[in-house]
Every structure is written in structure tokens, then in C-alpha cells.
Amino acid sequence: MLRTTMTAAVLGAVVGSVLAAGVLVAGAQSPTIAVAIDNSNFTPQTLTVKAGTTVTWTNKDTIPHGISALKNAFSRSKVLSTNDSYSFTFTTPGTYAYICFLHPPMTGTIVVEATTGSNAIQ
Image 1 (cartoon, rainbow, N blue to C red):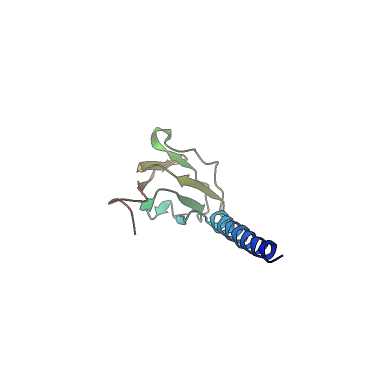
Image 2 (cartoon, rainbow, N blue to C red; image 1 turned 90 degrees about the vertical axis):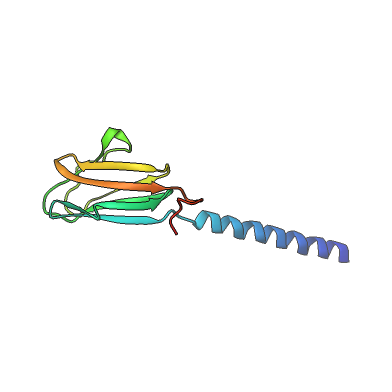
């Protein structure tokens, strides 16, 4: 009887620990950084993030805009009306130049650094 009770207690503790760890992993989300589109500008125009970061562009302008990476480095947005947003998660270190495909003089850059090592952002 004592052995059965102890076995049940140990199994309960193990299952509880595994479930708790699963909740922590499932609850972990990539950081999100905002870029505003306003007055026909991207703000900030240059952004440095860690790999795994999601960047969300939000059109706060009164005219439509669209996000397009040079060299097709990431997927293109739809046309963004006022208050529309577009998000992309950057997983690979590198420098990503982009434009507004409706207004090509509007440019921006996302610099993605490694999550570990000497290039990591703290």
C-alpha cells in the first residue's frame, strides 16, 4: 500500500512537471516589434532585432501602402489601408531591405542578428 502511494505521488510529480514545462514552452512567443507607416515614412526606418522576432508594420497614414522586400527576401504584404497591419517573423540573420511597393522612394531596413553568440542583442 505504501509503495503504491509513493509510486502514485512520484508519477503525479513527474506528470505535473512535464505539463508545466509544456505550458511554458507553448506560452513562449516571439517578441514583436512595431514599425509605423506615417506621413509616407517607415518609423523606425532602420531596425535591429534578434532572429525569431516578428516585425509588424501598421499603416497609420491616410493613403494605402505596401511592404515588399528587395530580392524577395520575405513575403510581400497586401495593400494596407489605414490601420491595416502586416507581420513577418525573421528567423535568419541578415540585412533585409524593403520598400513600399506603391511608393518606391519609401525605404526601410531590418537587420536580423543571431540570438546567441557575440552578435546577439541583449
